[in-house]
Length: 496
Length: 129
Image (cartoon, rainbow over all chains, first blue to last red; front, side, top):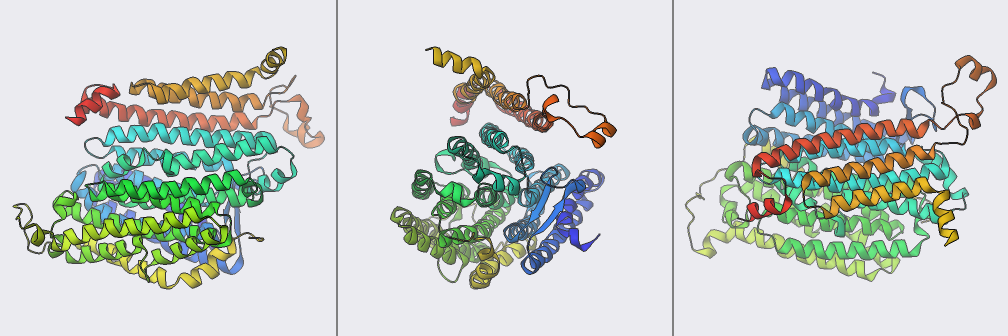
């Protein structure tokens, strides 16, 4: 293994171990945990090394099969994709501990199939952030989507129906993206992103270019559940097996937001996208609407996991809005928020997984007095909630700060108001849960038979990654400065 | 009127794919039967595949199989062969489409086992109860 191709092995190792899990896991379940954890641990180390190398030496390129670009497919690792690689590997690694435990409980006997899909999904996500080819991106987008459909359909009850709705919506999104790429290909005759960026501004075809951009953006918006196109997400994510939710919910939408950043920055060049004022203004307004509606819909939920899915929709609004503010602060805030939101969502979904493991449900009623039963889990939940609300020094505060600064710079007051409103709603939402969890059994006065009050903490396999994630929320928050200056600033295009 | 007809005749392949796409889109959004939705999705994907393939066509273009040594020595006259790249891309897109359809059919089977029907209205009625 040559060290120069390390980023390729980060992708390949989970992919190959997916097949090993399928083959060996069928004969003996003992193989599954070491294979999954081993390959993901390798990915974590590999992507950290890659990030360090990219920050030091600049962008790495790898030509698959030695076909030179623009004809061959190119893997490009720039600071942003290296950052995403680290994020994906860390989130997947932490989530897999909890998944191993909850899949054992929820899907006995089907672990090899679950973890085969799980690892292929992770490999697909790595591929998405690595690829430098627009059509390759479509194929990888579908690989991640198909595995997600399968993972969600493994859930109980209405999961299959939700998965089917997701298949229909996801396919529309992917087809729109493909159609947009078709326009680009007709216009430029190339599929390499860097090559498209070189050729596209030299063409004098504003209508065709704008159509192509619109198709690609709408396709990605469907995939990331941007507000009016979000209908598939709450059902799909809240009915998926708990083990799938802990990984899919933090990563899928965030990686799709990354793809939008990638498409805007690397493929279309910001100059081409952001010159159309009606596109940027419209997108920021839609994002503000997404934030407000996502938050309000979250208020109406009676189940913690469903509530979190609506918060995800609001958070997608944060990131899309930040990008279309089209200034340095907004873009920094968005990219930072991709990282932070993935970790916050991971933290909260790990809590959900731990509670479901112990009591089988996370309806708000059942959370009464849970603080006394699972103190560590709920302490981590409180930290995650603070991060979602945006209390310093948790990481959520810093990305929100950048986004608000960006909104003020761009003169988009509706976005600033939506952000502040959503923080307030998040505070209401989470303090309601925390109050219920801490004082619920006392204030209510009624004693539930099924909620014994002695301590019954989640197993270590779920607790350790959870505590680590909660600690990461503060560590990332405190190291925002170096993260922004050394990694994210490198990605902000000149002239912003 | 003449102009519109000319426009349609000159780009008839694109008009066909637009019509196909709208049929697929309508079936996906408007139909209440889940299998019909799936069929709509297939029509939608097929229209895009046809669109891509039609972009590679050239008037008088031949099959893009050339003799290696001849091509290395004298180069290839691009006007005499159709563009093979869209076809190759669409091979991949067809594979993707087939996989999605396969997964969707498997999911439909589970839905049928669970509810005994594939009509969306009836399923919703059963879940509400």
